[in-house]
Length: 165
Image (cartoon, rainbow, N blue to C red; front, side, top):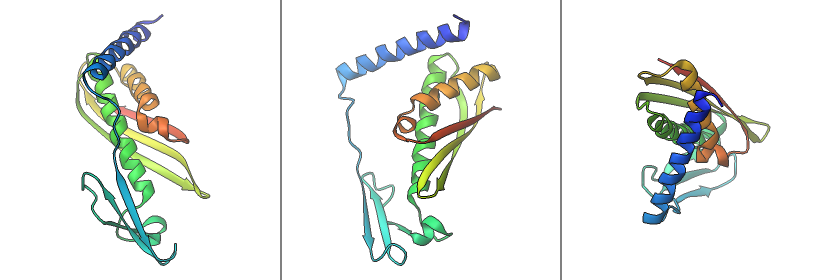
C-alpha cells in the first residue's frame, strides 16, 4: 500500500469516527425545502422558484431562461451551483483532514443538457493549498468528487479538472 493510500485509509477511518460522534450528538438526518410555481404552458408560461432559506425567493424561471438567454435562473444552473458548492466543501474537509488546510478553492460546474437529459457535470477546480503536491491535490480532489453527496445523487458522467495554483 503506497503512502497516499495509507493517508486516505487513515483519513477515511477518521471521518467515520467523526461522523459517528456527530451522529451520537446530533441527528444528521435533515430535510431542506424548495418550491416551484408555474403558470401557463411550457413554452409561453413562466414560474418562480423559492428556497426555505429565502436565498431564492420567487426567483423567475421560464422557457427563455432555460433554453435561451432570458433573465432568471433554470434547473441546470441550480444543479451546477449545488454540485460546485457540495464538492468544494467536501474537498475542504478532505484536504484539512489530510493536513493540508486550503487557502482558496474555486470550483465552476458546467452542466450539459442534451436530448432531454443532463448528460454531464464537469467540475473545474482551481485551488491554492500550501505544502501539497499536484498529485496529492489531484487524488484528494478525485476522492471529493466521488463522495460528495450531490455527486452521489446525480446519475450522470462527472468529470474533473483540478489546477493547483
